[in-house]
Amino acid sequence: MKFHSIALTAALLAQTSAFTTTTGNGVHTPSSTALHAKTVSFKEDSRKKLVSGINQVANAVKVTLGPKGRNVVLERNYGAPEIVNDGVTIAREISLADPECNVGVRLVQEVASKSDSKAGDGTTTSTIMTQAIVNNGMKAVTSGVNPIALNAGIKKAAGMVTNKIRELATQINGIDDLQSVATIASGSVDMGRIIAQAQDKVGENGSTVIEESQTLFDEIEFTEGLTIDRGYISPYFVKDQERQVAELMNPRVLVTDAKIDNVNEIVPLLEQLVKTKEPVLMIAEDVTGDALSALVVNKMRGVLDVVAIRAPGFGQRRKAYLQDIAIATGATYVAEEVGITLDSVTTDMLGTCDRIVIAKELTTIVTDGKQEAAIEARIAQIKREGEEADTDFDRDKAQERVAALGGGIARIKVGAATETELKDKKLRYEDALNSVQSARELGIVPGGGSCLAYIQDVFADDILASFEDEDERAGAAILMKSLSEPCCQVAENAGIEGAVVLSKVVDLCKAEGFGFGWNAANNKYCNLMEAGVVDPAKVTINAVENSASVAGLVLTTECLVTEIPVFESEEDMQRRFDAEGMGMGMGGGM
Image 1: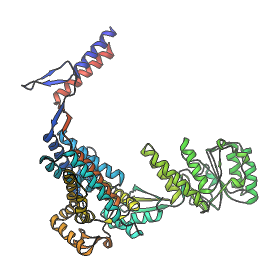
Image 2: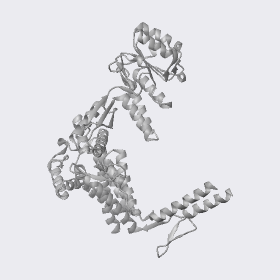
Image 3: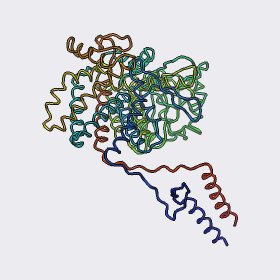
Image 4: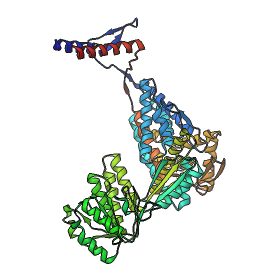
């Protein structure tokens, strides 16, 4: 009887999951096969659908460009709607009912995501350029230009343009340039000042973290030195009862991955330290039993100033953290795998530092500068490991280790009156932070789209002359034409005719030289580099490369395959759920 019930359940489930076809009168008839039908469109029809999707995303995103760009409201199924000014966030939220148009949407999302992951900003610029290249390229393909040659010309021209941007870029020079980059990226002078202050304080190897705050104002906190997210093992180690911390001045540091539970293993070392009267920090897997009791008793009697903490991390990552601490303090890493046991440790194997502050759940080690060369080598090694890491988690952990060893951590605590404003500010901070890091890599160029407009005006003839094939030259011309789009869009968002601003910027560059353009914030034509209106060269380069890559491939599309969506009425859904429930009930009950 059991066998029959299972067979009946399987039959019911098979019937409910069967593919349904629609007859001419709209009646659904079950089919014996389960297939997923797809729509196939060709040539002009396929490209039109892609372009339609691309245009809808680009039109939604481009209103945010520039200092006078508008915001976009994103509906949320749960919680309050989001009001954002971030290009990639807006692009990711768009999904169209037409599956063919939706493919175009996905392509633009890829452009925005690539720009965001490589440079952290410039997503709106890359989306605008993708739209311009695709729309102009479609006209060329319709007129009979070879799409393959067109794509090749677009990519070659993009390579030449990016080389020109690298030549024109100037390196970051001081905190003022950092503040200019951050201010332009975030659209706020206050945000720019805070990020520049944080980046200047922690240095190139430091880390800046964006966190939420419960206040109405933005705050910044600095953590100098090597921080470990572990505190004292016993509260009896506390010296400052008011602050509930133990502070050691010029201490020695023992670093081991062993578990210390036998006091006899550390007695020889402790006797040597008692003679020298030096404070000591013990970092071990754990300190328990007789060993912990002996340390606490000696601490309370004033015989030895000692604090013990557990090693940070777990597994292999714990060993890496311990080795980082050993290198930063000049200590010998005590472990059985390197042939060193606890009872053989001498004071020469202990590290040194200026100061250590141990709180309940955090330890900060301020190094003494004696191990600078070793720390630099270790940082270079960790950076290589981070570049070769397979997951984002491993890359983030590598960045944290570099920050801890290098310059410390700055925490920007973002405050706002409402949750909607808080999310918008966090996105702006993240964009600005990424822009500053990109600017440090490849330098800066004039902002407001004037750099690309200058390249279009000055170098267009030379770039086009380097192409022998007529169709490739047409592709290069399409890319060069798209370079003026960001400048025009910044003007359009400020309520001024884009072509008029572009014409004046070009004339100004001819008369005054590279670096001059239009400042949309105050509606003035000036030297943008001196006015602080700058963009990271890396962001501009990535915008050109990514837009050329995807737009060129769209133009070579000759066929588009998409799934046919199946729409179920409430009655159909209820009927299917009832059938599935009945099948499961019969299977369980008989």
